[in-house]
Each structure stands twice: as C-alpha cells, then as structure tokens.
Length: 250
Image (tube, rainbow, N blue to C red; front, top):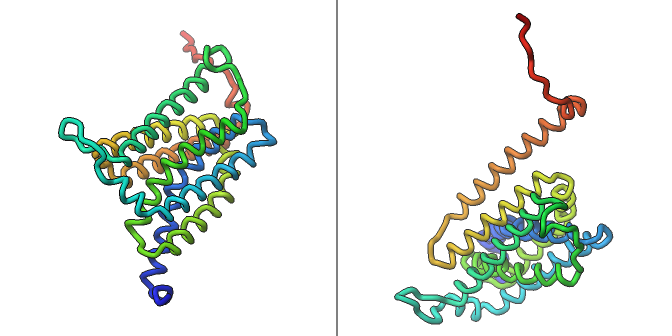
C-alpha cells in the first residue's frame, strides 16, 4: 500500500476523475435525452439507473483488463487494414449514435405533422436497453483512458465511483435544463452526431484529438448560453411583437 503515500498517485487520481467527468458528459446527455421520452414520474429513475449501469459496466471492464487489452489486437485483415474488436465496437456504437441522433432531430424538427414524429412514449425497458448499449461503448473509451494513466486498479475504480457520484448529482439538473430549452436539446443532439462521427473515425484508425472536439462543444455551449441570456433579458412583449416595416413619408 506504499503507493497511497505517493503524491503522483493522488495527482493521477484527480486527473483521472476530471477525465472521467469529461467523458461522462456524453453519457449524461444521451441518458437525459432518452429519459425525456418517458413519463415525468419515470425520468429521474431512468437517469439514475442509466448512470448506475454506466458505472457497473466501467467497473466490470476494469476487472477485465486482459480482455480490454486483447480487444486492441487485430482479429482479421481486410485489404491490408487490420480490424480489432475495439474497432468493431466503436464503429457499431458510432453508427448507432448517428442513427439515433438523426432520428431524434428529425422528430424534433418535423413536429406532430411529421410522419415519424407522432408523440409515442417509450417504455422504461426499451430506454434502458438503448442506454446499456451506449454505456458499453462510452465505458470502453473511458476504461482504455484509465488503463493508460494509472497502474493500480483500486485508483481506477475509486475515480470511476467519484465521477459517477458527481454525474448522478448533475444528471437531474442537466436533464431538466435540456428539456426546458428546445435549442439546447438540439445542440445536445448535434453533439451526439459529432461524437458518433468521432467514434466511426476512430474505428478506422484516424485519430481526432479530443481537445479539438471538446473545444468545439464548449464554444458552442458558450454561444448558446449567451443566446439564452439575451432572450431572457428581452421583454415578452418585444419577443412576440410582430415585425412592421418602417415607411418613409414623402
């Protein structure tokens, strides 16, 4: 247990918690959007259950480090392109995210008149199945990051649990905020498109630095916050006042 007294251990722990929180935001956004399709009395339980499933999947993957490492080994080769288990998981997960986000955007824009957008409430079980599928994809990315940073399994698990506790506390706030503001929900769906595309690209061995992705997402959120603040400061009368073209007397 000498590693507990090593300052480097605690620096790695704090850094890993921060990274887990950043990576977990994707999970929270996706869970919040899916939970919004459930009746109001089930949404909080769906968010908490979804994050709990994410934590369980991460911990199970951490206990299967040899399997995780094996996923990066090539399974077969197609036209001199080596394909591993990780590539397959990321590719399928990315396609699922792209399809799901596109479907949600279509329903949001088409409204009740759209062919695919009749307001049909999803069941709790179907939402949890979708959350679990994406939890595995997001967890794989998170665990690979943890393995690359820290050697001690207890530190990895502790970082995951601390980050998960923070996400549970924030999930309700994020979910309610997204549901209250349609433009924020659309922005969140565009993030899912961006993440899905990134996963597909990563599966094809084309690395996109995460810093670029998070900077784009962060800047978009900053601009949207400015828009919301501006809209809040404008009076209701001004918001709903019809536009009248000015006429010049001759």
